Figure 1 (cartoon, one colour):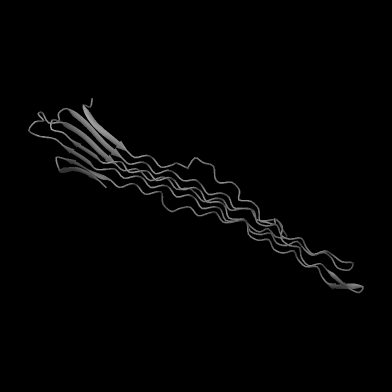
Figure 2 (cartoon, helix red, strand yellow; figure 1 turned 180 degrees about the horizontal axis):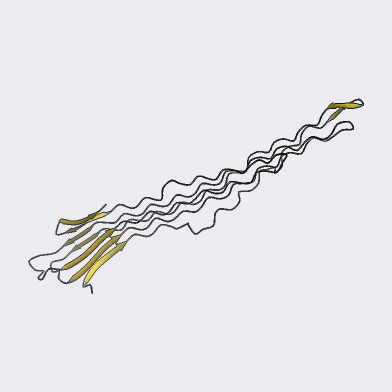
Length: 226
């Protein structure tokens, strides 16, 4: 049982890891590429054949995931008394960094344009090639953890008999987890598909852990955490 003490804890950062990925970014406008050139006759024969439809453009990039929130620092503790005996417990705890949200899926590639129209003596043109799918959205970055504040304890050793039993700890906040990039979008339809888009970039590292702290008793450091 503790006869006294104090705990200071920083607030945890917003955790976005549980949120669903951002919604579909929408289709290319217009969703279908332009039509190819129409065929033209030359008298009783085909003069200029119909053109292939225009190749579709790449789909829209997915929306990036939200980053995790940053944990706040724990306030330092300064505890000074003349008389101190019994059991005392002190702690500073940095807030945890929040987890990040995954990136959203990329948009579908634009549909290849229709082939040019036929004429009396010329056939119609082929459809254009579909556009590639859009790149997936960036994965969110995990939030950084908060720092653990220092602890300063001071008492009069001549008056505090028997001396106190002190339990003290400084704990920095852990960094939040980063999230995966979104899936690439589907290739647009056409005379040859556009191909799936690339996945969005995933951050290389989680959020950084918070800085540590030091425990001082009567001016002397008794423990330090990086």
